[in-house]
Image 1 (cartoon, helix red, strand yellow):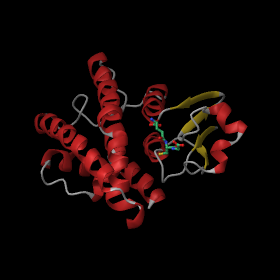
Image 2 (image 1 turned 180 degrees about the vertical axis):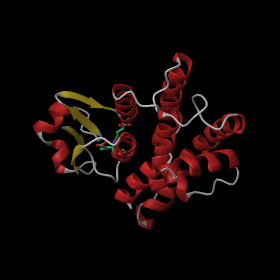
Image 3 (image 1 turned 90 degrees about the vertical axis):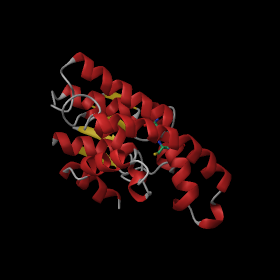
Image 4 (image 1 turned 90 degrees about the horizontal axis):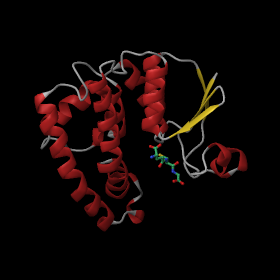
Length: 201
Ligand SMILES: N[C@@H](CCC(=O)N[C@@H](CS)C(=O)NCC(=O)O)C(=O)O
């Protein structure tokens, strides 16, 4: 059975969302980021980066949340994995784009704006992250103003990967980016997304 390493309160929530979409059975090792369990020789053999999520799919070990979801959707012939090569390429494009433009920036912003206890927040980190986030959300808003989904005519792994990574945006004011807000709500209102979110909150 597929084994997922990573707690729902980490980037593993992205994998949990995909697993729920696919209806796959799995066993979860509820390891928190930076926990002692992620520093053992056994875990470091799975992911030398000492990070979650990681999957072990019958001996095939894979890390990087975006790659994991692309792999799972493709392996299980899901409609979430575009069959048209152009839409498939757009799924890669948006997954890579998110990792470059928003992934760590949103984590840094959220942590230092509202997640960490106030005495641990650094306003300079939040401000730097916010300065990077705004132009990226402008780009996303323009694209989603023209197309309801990121890679073709329907919801796909592209939307799942980017929307799941924008989890923290659910508690942010997005009125400046109405198309992003609408799309994010549509993505996160899917039953599988609600299931993953409930495991986290
Ligand atoms: N690019 C990786 C990032 C993974 C990552 O940063 N995971 C965090 C938890 S959300 C982690 O394990 N951090 C612990 C550390 O960096 O030591 C992915 O998308 O999977």
